[in-house]
Length: 116
Image (cartoon, rainbow, N blue to C red; front, side):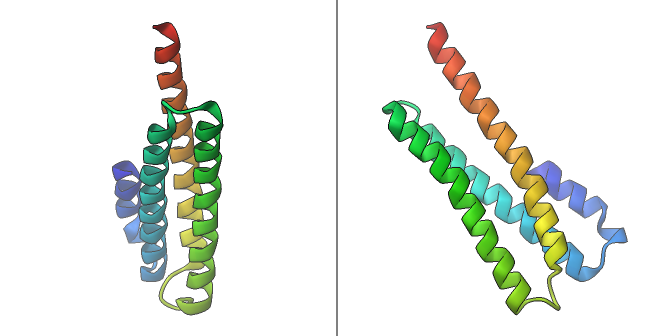
C-alpha cells in the first residue's frame, strides 16, 4: 500500500488536484479493504472448507460492492472536487495488486500447512 501511495505522490506534479484526491481516495480505500479481506481470510483459514470459501468469496464481492458504492457517491456528490476516473483507476489497479497478494498468501499458507 505504501508503494501505491508513493507512486501517486510521485505523479502529483502531472495530476490536477481533483485527480490527486481521487487517486489517494482509491488507493486508501483499496488498501483498507485489502487489509480487512486479508484479516477475514486469515480468520477463516483454520475453519471448515465451506467457511473459508465463503469468507474468501464474500471478501472479494464485498470489496467490489464497496468500490461501486464509493464510485457512485463520488460521481453523484463530489464530481467537481474528486475525479471519478482517477478514483476508479486507482481502486482498480490497487485492487488487482492486493488481490494477487492475498491469493498468494492464501496459497503460501495452504502449502505450508500441507507440508506438515
